[in-house]
Image (cartoon, rainbow over all chains, first blue to last red; front, side, top):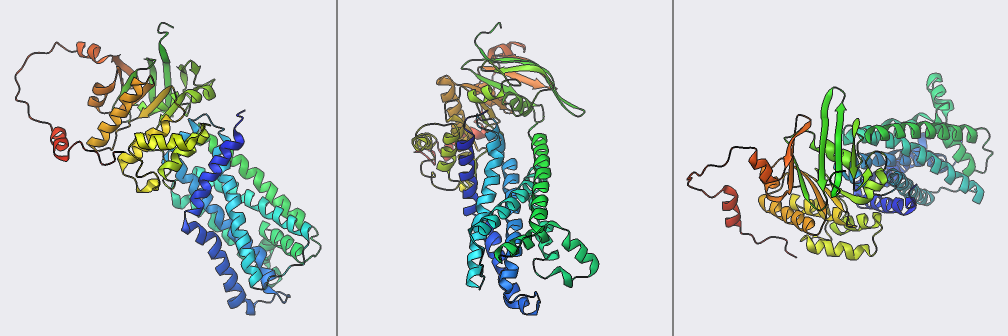
Length: 253
Length: 257
């Protein structure tokens, strides 16, 4: 194997991160939009939502973080698509570099840029009254789950980026994923929903992830939720990775 | 092999896409340090050959070796020897010209990447634009940057797939000069083009790809002999539009270092 995997990947990461920091559009969508959601739901709709807690920011934050990540990964698909179109992918592949670094550069960029927007959103939430009694271990667990969630969605984005026919197509796959938190326990308790909607909401991945993070923040027992959440993430991650590799081989035959 | 001087040897190369037979048995050799031009109309399969030789595509059958390494079984070794400048300038639009060069220098593990970048920026008349994003560059500047990126690490063989397509006359002449300099310094240049004058001007050997095979190959002199000997005729010679254009615009280049 190539001995330069790490240095090649870090060059790719540096390149791709510049694409993020030089695109105001990206920064606005992945950070400002989720913060706007947070403000909207806390200060506009929040008063009418009965969650059974007195701090709606606490209730809302996990779901907002997932929405931020879901919208962030659409840019990974977009950047990947552009690389394929521009021919720079072919240039890299004709060079004596670790081929895996080309995709991993994009995947790591997604992790770094999403981590930055998550931190920014948590800081704003703190200003808005978010409080957590969680200890170091609970915070580490939250971080781990968010990283796993980002990684899972990023590999779905890789499939989209590799197989899309247009830049719009490359980004459009993320809309259903951004929408999933709305039909979950992220904004309102599922108990208030009609039976069929509730059945969907309670059995889709986002609810278990949101409930787990919420429980960790509140120092509550996570129960079964954490295992359901991890199974969803790891299961989808494995499937997405396999399909991404198939799409990659087809592109690079 | 009969030609021990050959740095590239291609035998019986075939490639089909479903029912479309693009290459139907392509054979040619490229001598070390020469400029080899592959001529053919659009869609003749020139890019397919380039992609096979640069390890981006596997042939259905046949063999191809580049710098002594088989493109199918030793692709990593081939990549050590080559550089590809594809048909569309493969540069990063969001990075600056200098950042593009430094990126490639780091990927090729060249020491003092910054110095290598600055040297190339000077040589290619891009010093003034070094710190501008490539998205602001003209077509000719992009192409020059693209070729400059291909020179990093001094690859022994450089593939240029239609390097002057879409360039203005001055841009073409600049690229021609770069190609000539490369060959003079001992680099083997594999060039595809659809412009006959380009091949005529630059190439040591020319191969014409038509209908999936190389129908003729040889030096320009050899190809000339395929036609009846020239007759002497008196023709009033008008300046070509290119000559007029260059005379009016002047050969003073916009981006001299």
